Image 1 (spheres, one colour):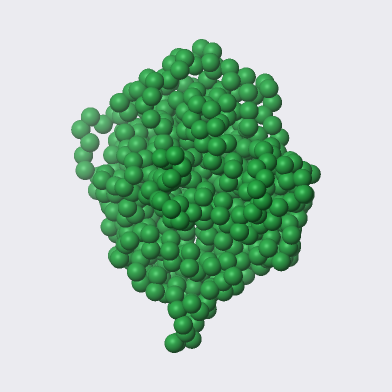
Image 2 (cartoon, one colour; image 1 turned 180 degrees about the vertical axis):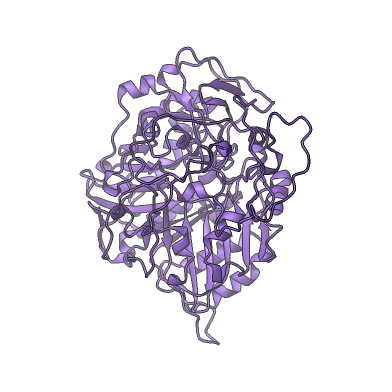
Amino acid sequence: MSQASQHGKWTLSSSDDDNDDPLPSASNNNSPLLFGSPPPDQHTSSESNHNSPKIGSNFHQPKHDPDPPPSIEVKPEPKSDTVTAATPLSIGSEARHAAQASQLKPVKYESNQSSPFLAGKRKKDDDSISGWALSDSDDDDKDKGQSSGQKDPQPKRSNPKLKKAKVEERPPSPHGRTYYIDEPDDFFETSVPPVNDTYRFYLNKVTGLEKRYNTGALHIKEILSPLFGTLKESVQFNYCFDIAWMLQQYPPEFRDKPVLIVHGDKREAKARLLQQAQPYSQVRFCQAKLDIAFGTHHTKMMLLWYEEGFRVVILTSNMIRADWYQKTQGLWMSPLYLRLPKGSPETAGESPTLFKRDLLEYLGAYRAPEIADWIQRIREHDLSETRVYLIGSTPGRYLGSDMERWGHLRLRKLLRDHTRPIPNEEKWPVIGQFSSIGSMGLDKTKWLAGEFQRTLTTLGKSSLRPDPPMHLIYPSVDDVRTSLEGYPAGGSLPYSIQTAQKQIWLHSYFHRWQAETTGRSHAMPHIKTYMRASPDFTQLAWFLVTSANLSKAAWGALEKNNTQVMVRSYELGVLYVPSAFSMSTFPVQMDVFPATTPSTAFPVPFDLPPKCYSSKAMDVEHSLHPGSRHTR
């Protein structure tokens, strides 16, 4: 359905594995922060741009609106003369395809006040080309914009003097062409950045923060730079792609190297993705099989093959500009894996965490010939230095011992086998932090407490099943309003009204996003983390960074009287347990930045203890922020 607001029109969509069950009459007073259309990454999957407005007592019942929302204050975009790589395209799944029509007539977005948190200077673009595009990753329809006064537009002749090839053409912002601010001259590293050799867990750099909060963080340009190796070939697994932008993040000397893109798009979305790559002969594709309804390819991983060796990066960011701009993201970067001597046995190069075996098993689950060469390359390298456990999800229904190969049952098995019971563990809270919420049933026993919480509370082989506190961190309306991106940041935080109204019980678990320890309180989280903390929040029993949001589609759900588990989506993350680092627990790092030296304390991305939503927030902040499409 579409709904009008002062920001224009926005569209509601269900999230994750929602169905079309009739909604109970809404009692909006207990609804939490809700963000508009579901992400393309969850049944209504999506992931990197989310928004929502307020659901007050006067909010009328949503109805399905099959037509794309008309735009207001239409201001057509002029034809661009800049030499760009590809024909303007819309990016994403069919769930978002209807929304692309409004890109042709973008709503002009103006603000008389600049955010107090922006520390940089905005690029001075011509106001005539400012507009509200639906997605950071979607190329604007530059060729279709015409002046409203031209009744019979004539073909525009290209003027060689106007065609200025740029090193990087910024993709359209969902908030207008003048939205992005310039990174300062010292934003990118020119030498090997500080490396946390202990945990190899990093946050992304955020534009607009003080320099100290980016010291020790990484940007995609640095990850792909010669600072980490001489690149020969790479694979990008992800959900959302802006191919032209992605290729510009490779340094010029690596920009023509072969790139394999692993995606889950189908039909029209796939056609648009392939069209993006037409100008680039070095780009090839591998389509992930999604045989279960509402599943998505949500895994975010890089495989980087160097002259010197091989590297794996598992992250939470989509391959679009907005995800690397002013959002909080996280990643694990492997050590440089060296090539094994010829003739090494097949079991050589394995780590104590069996990371090599598990990575090969995950890649094999794609059953894709395009990945076969990479599987062989991994076999030929030494991954023995890896100290994390791999946790993946792949679509399917699994029985018997296969049930523990994927999803939250895989996490449960690892926690049972590689952690130990802790005295008074019933007082050690479980913390989950995510950017999207799926349907979990009419009460907590249906999945959250009945399955998922049991997994998160597992510690060793203890038969005790304590019921510790559970804190779920999800930004409030006020968190989004005061963020670096403002309300449009809600576009990356999808939680549909339909789903929220069916699970009002969930809202009592919610805690706000606050991250003063990393300087990222105003950089809305697209990172997903789960952990078990001590009662005083100074120690961790384990820590997980992953692509998986809070949904059954991502983590799996038991079926047939718990005799099988069904997983809809591809997900990937890494688990840290103290035993792999010869520790009993992880101390929590108090001051994460600047990160200039290795530390045995763990850099949790947000403040502990989490802060509950206020009762006022629970009563008043029932909102859906108008904004751009979702990106999960």
